[in-house]
Length: 260
Image 1 (spheres, one colour):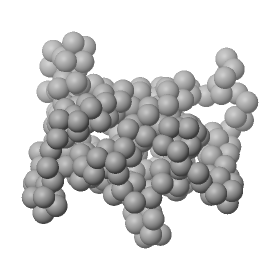
Image 2: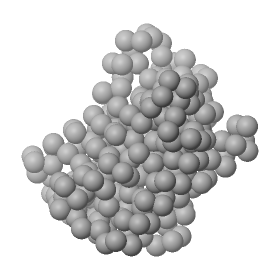
Image 3: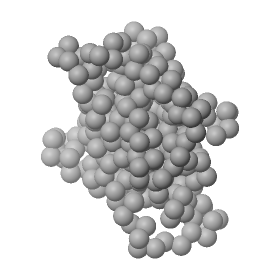
Image 4: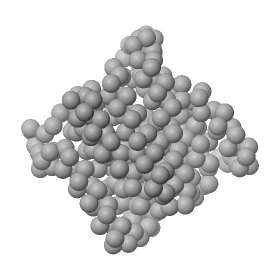
């Protein structure tokens, strides 16, 4: 991945997480983010579909459905983590757990063989991220930081969707923007019943309270992940997953400086 692209990706990802932390959140918020993002990104998805001459096949449905379902769990878990814990703890912990499991899955499932230098670099990134959260030995104790449980589960969901999405864009060659948009559209129908079940007017309440954050997250969240998907088309996922974690530095700074 080019250095400038990596920095933009990291900044975009950390920024939308900061916006999510600032918002009231909830299932209604996440549903509206998916709806607005699907509308905003639809023209670009259609343009990439036409430009690249993409041909949809029935087998492409399984990674789209699987990714949408895992991303639904991911956004709910991440939002719950931010409601109960600090950005500067929950974000690094989730982002550090994801690469550990992703690298293991890439080796065992995808047959990737990252070199010793790549593994050493990934280990340094992961250990550094865990140290940002305080004492890593506390994570599985009763006095663990607030939101740590949701952060660890979020990391598990990151590993799952990363492997599925790698297969979608590099094996099935589904164009990244098209793939992400299809997952977004499907995620609307997965999140909406959850929001309506919890509160009949959840979408209206979320829009009145957080529409600024909804629009910003709807722009930046897909942008950050489309850059990741584009990189995964031609780069081993065991390299991409740790490289994304530069965003931890931005998130830790935002949490400490802006959110105190």
